[in-house]
Each structure stands twice: as C-alpha cells, then as structure tokens.
Image 1 (tube, one colour):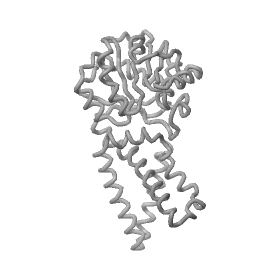
Image 2 (cartoon, helix red, strand yellow):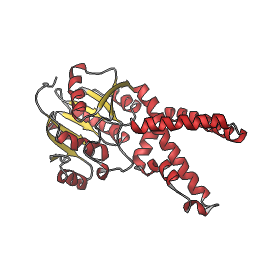
Image 3 (cartoon, helix red, strand yellow):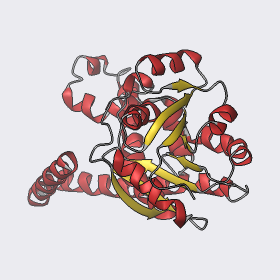
Image 4 (cartoon, helix red, strand yellow):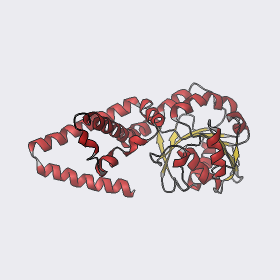
Length: 290
C-alpha cells in the first residue's frame, strides 16, 4: 500500500483535454511532487511541458510507469483497452493504476482477462467540452465536477484513500457507482445527447439539398443543439461503440418521448404541451446550474 503522507509521482498517458487538464491540476496538487506525461504525439508532449501541464516527458509508457507510482490512463476508450495488457504486465506492487474512460463495461471485460499486479481504479470525471485535444484543456476543469469512481470485484480498499484524496485534491466531488449503473446512466446523460446532435446534424445536411435556405436560417437553437457533434470523431465513436446496448435503450426512450410530443402537437393538446415546456425549463435550469 502507498504511504499516505508522501508525495506521489503521477504519470499521465494521453495528453488530450482530460489528460492535460488533470496534469494542470496535479502539478499544483498537495499530493503530487511531479507529473510525467506521455502522448503518441511528440509535439503534444512538448506543448504540455511548455504549458506546465507536466514537468517531465516519458519516452515510452514503460519508462513512465517505472518512474511513477500513480499511472493515469487518459486515452480514448478503445486505446485504453488496447493498453491494458502492457500496463498490467509492466506495473509492480506499490503502484496504482487509474483510467478515466467514459464507459466502463468493456474496460472491465478486458481487465478480467488480465493479471494486474497493482490496484486498479476506474474513474470518469464528468467534465469537459467539445474542444478536443490539449487546446481544450484548462486549469480547474474538475472543480466541483462529479468524479465517478467505479467499484468492481477487485476493488483494492487499502489504496482507496490515496485515490479519493487525489480526486479531492483537484476539487472534484467523488461519487461511487458500479459499472452497470454508470454505463446505463451515462447512456442517457451523455451518449444520447451525442446521438441526438449527430442525428440533427445529419438531418440538417440531408434536408439542405431540398431546402438550401437551411444554412441561412441556422441560428442559435440549431447551433446549441448540435454543439457536441463538433467533438472528436474518435472519442464520439468510442463512446457509442463501447456502450451499444445502453445507448440503444436510451434511443428507444427518446423515440417514445418524440412520438408523445408529436402526438400532443398534432392533436392540439396545448395544456399538456405547456406543462412539458414548463417542466423542461426547470430541468434545463437544474442541469446548467448544477
């Protein structure tokens, strides 16, 4: 088990928006003495060091693991799954491995086939924007943001304090969930909005062939509704393709809701329609205000 009071050396694999934002905050955390970074792009590594996102660059993942005691996998989901065999084979006891993947079931499916010699914690910070890459990173991104810690069969309680204190040190709010609950809920709150944005963007493009004026009349409502469609295509694909069943179920719920809305509008049931608009207004305020 890691000693509670000593400062740790963190190693972040993947310096995109989330990985780099973690680097920013861990560089000033009371718990870390050094933050080492690795990204498949040398240019990104150099930018990260210049911006003080990290203090040192690792030439390889193996080198970074050897030089640190907390390893954070902040790569896209499928890349994280591909890295797990290397990471689990390379880590030794006395270290901790953390991933920050947006979906969990496939990560754990792969993890169960491996013998990870270090305590493993799967987390998901509910933070970020459609601006992908290191250019989207910012200091304080996780302050007051929910940081999910996903429990699993191999949950190492002896290292739990280290991970929870690390999360709290960057100002995040800890929430513990099991993987099934996480993926079911995140399909509704995160994956489905992407599906809706992608579908609306597709619909806009296809209808513009018949109605070219679409582009002239595209205002704030459309821009707001399809904003997340500007996210990294790789990250969006990973999110949807690693949570297929839950996403499909959420789409079914959305179709039911759209059918109900269509019926109210066509039948002129204005009382129910106004109630929905009023409730939605309050829900939107709650989501935006936290």
